[in-house]
Length: 134
Image (cartoon, rainbow, N blue to C red; front, side, top):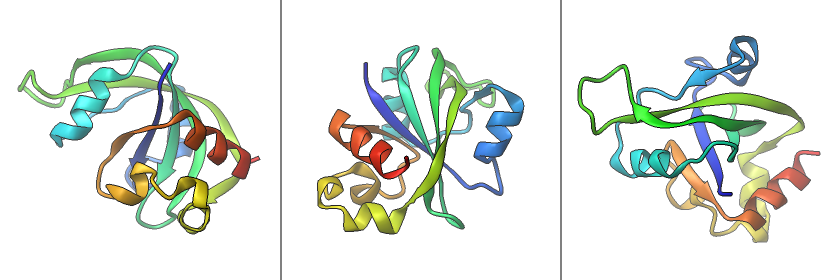
């Protein structure tokens, strides 16, 4: 099992939208590194859902429901998507400021590659964030 973090502007597609929809295809990724991460995602992998730009906080946990397939929003077969389903809300959102202040998270991809929309997490990073959000 691998752990992941996906980012979305809540004004474009929020955690509440995913919960309401019950499932979504993570379409529109047009960065090769993020795409490479998408193709590594496996069914059942946990995914932290991060609200970028306006909120800057991790707000929920989803999981991969369907592994990589061609993104239907592109005719180019190189662009892939996965399906995500919501698992649960965080009791308290974990803010970017909290992450920056926690020494255990100093090497997290969210801080090193802040523009990347799909990124892997180490198991200990995932566990630390879960602890902060509960």
